[in-house]
Image (tube, rainbow, N blue to C red; front, top):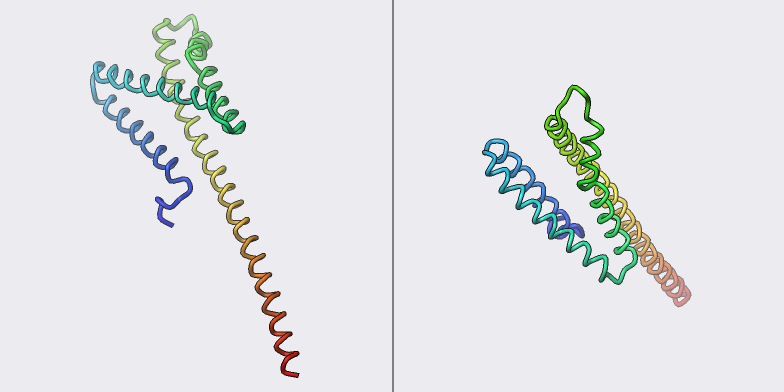
Length: 168
């Protein structure tokens, strides 16, 4: 199957695009100066805000209750893990041996690692979910095929029986 024929083609493309941005921006910023980092950070924040607005709109306007619940779960996660969590991490990391600047630097690194770990887990969950959906789809296709084959076999047997009757 060609990737373009996949039922998940659009989502796979979106994931690939985001991963490419992540890799490229991190590599460029690791080698660049603070101005480049600030520029890329601003772009990433704007994209994040735009995506959040799209999710909020989707949650408000979607007719499917299931999609609304899943979208709201994404929004709830974003709120929970936002700036208040970062501040809590800074407080949790603070010791009498460290300055507030050191605490913030460590919290930023820790949160970045957490976010990447979470993204990895999300990819694993996406794989499991996609495989389950594909399995269910294939199972349904096989059941439909078996039912069609069973009907055809029954009809064929009936015709053979009728043909045998005719030959007598």
